Amino acid sequence: MAGVCCGSSSKRTKLNKMNQDESESSSSKDGHSSKHTTTNLALIKPRSERLIVCHDMCYFCFDVLFAHLHRHDPPETPNTFPNDAYPLFVTWKSGRDHRLRGCIGTFSSLNLHHGLREYAITSAVQDSRFSPITKDELPKLTVAVSILTNFEPATDYLDWEVGVHGIRIEFSGDKGGKKSATYLPEVAHEQGWDHVETIDSLMRKAGHRGQITLDIRKTIRLVRYRSEKLAVAFNDYAQVRRIKVGA
Image (tube, rainbow, N blue to C red; front, side, top):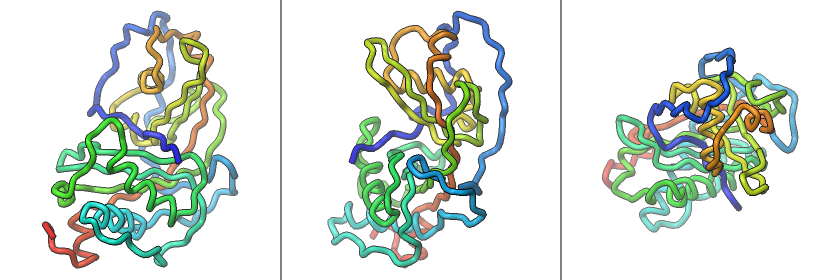
């Protein structure tokens, strides 16, 4: 199943605004990351106060990667969280500076047991922006599971809130083909970007090589969404699973 890369591989990079050939004022709605939210792209459900994401999902992702890197049998299907279907992303970061090592997911609703098993590996070893994660890196890793919720079409490319919404954009490319890309809710906030910087970065990520003007931005079709996100470091996982670091 084809996956979607979720974020920026750079660290707090300010975009060059030379492409902004038309002056444009936009209210930058800086917000804070929302950890308690809820929904689904293919099937929008009523908002619920019940949290979906849980620590056991992160432990399972570590189980899957640990077994893969050590050439063990795959872990059994978990019984510690439900198998409902949601769009999801798995993110791996490394070290004290939380350097991104892989982030891939899907906007299709997948049963969590299968989806987390698949994308725990895909994001770790098949993200084309990075070399595959190795066994030696395990003790430095942190895994985050993002369950995507509350998808809704935006009225325009500015109709979303930094630090609250993830965004997925679609637009016609330089040669007429469709291009698309996404950033999870935390990306713009972590990079220190405003709305326009985020959109321009996302267009570059999608493969747009031409000049980015106000008229081009106005052609963007944007879907905003939220996510429930939880992260677990390897040391915490190893303690729960009683694994000796370096095993």
